[in-house]
Length: 325
Image (tube, rainbow, N blue to C red; front, side, top):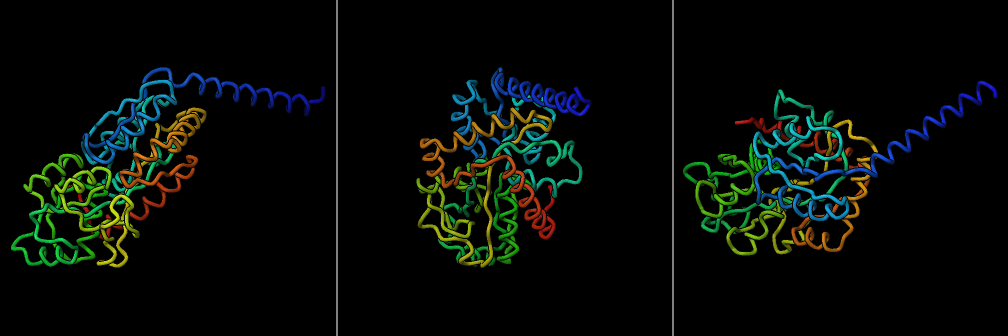
């Protein structure tokens, strides 16, 4: 046997062995319940999306998918927990714009999101909606701007926390509308909505449609506009904010990440299971009712989205001088 032929055969044998090992690892996964970690309190949009996905993934993975809420530090506690977890696919992160926003917002973090979290799959994209309590004397965006400008002191704007998509969307509104609003951060969208519903400390909020739509339909909150370029199917009678502020656009999105170093075979297994869940008619119907548009595709699609959104929101954070209060 020539040296060249022996080298080729040896390389082929090693490649085959590695392929079989990766396949065996993926086949054995998962060996216990999978934790799906989200960085905000129950009741918010991330929690709602996580629970829909968890219920759909469990039968496809053959193990329970447990949603774990770790609110605090604008989602950084959850990200750190997953970044430092064993890279075996049993700890996953429900990520969104907050993760790329935080990279520009915080000077020092105990992790590097781009380095320590591997993209697995995209989930859904959803519009935000501008909400006010019914006691606010404004039924349109122009009326709200006039009311805010004439108020003796700045109206309070609730958000799910510093640097969240809700916060940054509000800061962009303030810049473009030329109004001053007092930002009031909460530990998640759920607590912020509760205060807004009670007509307490907050009068306005930008929130993702999934967590807000039930309150709008019940009449507890008034929707003034959605933040996407086109109207939302879930709120067809609500105008777009760009009708009043041309060029305004913001949306939220969700994806799944895993600790860096998670075997490729496991990432591919998860990606396949998530894409299958997103094709399920029942899951599609639930997301459609919340105004969410599925984003199926390979992990590379999520990686590209993370890069694009990081650049976009980083500019907004710097231009608006967004700070952690």
